[in-house]
Image (cartoon, rainbow, N blue to C red; front, side, top):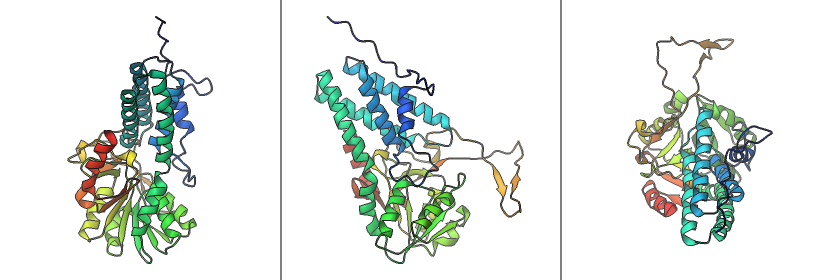
Length: 339
């Protein structure tokens, strides 16, 4: 019998960058979060899928079990790197990696021959990554019908899929956009210029003023870090308060999210969310000239969550690449995705 091939190391150093090949592949596909103008930017889960395809391509394993072990190891390496970056959530990334692993496992069961199976994983995986990349366009086409002429839409922070939907709607309709500043990274304030240059009348709103402006808003449009099993979402901190405020004012809350963000999580409260590394939070007094930093006493604790959980009861509809869904339909779609 031929001797088994040695397992291809996933942490083979990249001489130019001193990092593993899987991380080099991942970073090569990523666009900096501050670059809002790259319409072809890959979401982190899609970039991770492409990096995992590279693992399959380079693998020297000669058994299905060996290849699967390499994929699991590479997925964990990607998740560990992302967690170490700080101020990032791992939920959607973990969902994307899990979907790819589930998909490869299903292929193993369908095609027992190893070489044929690996070729099929590469071919189908590239097709799946392409479909995921086009998800924004499908969501924009279905969701833009819910924005009408003369409306005021309120959004929170920065989401590429929300941006695609808004720009698609702006092609045929005239509406105004309110965008919360998005503390602590001011992602909403950064995004305001992007929407303004696209010809959408845009107003930046203080996070704390969401209740003040809500009575004049027609709808709330949000992205999502993850869509969980019960139809709720995990998203940028402040989303839960915004959705509760919208419900109190009888305003619809729409969520735009790709299906690879559907996560097998069932949080019952905020403490059920996975923890993530957080960078120190700084405070400033913007009423001073020049802006003055505000020091917090050492003995005072600072609560700095990156994300929060919004229950399904505060969400009207979800715009996804699988179609327009009610929150109650999410569990059925999750079953189909992970079958």
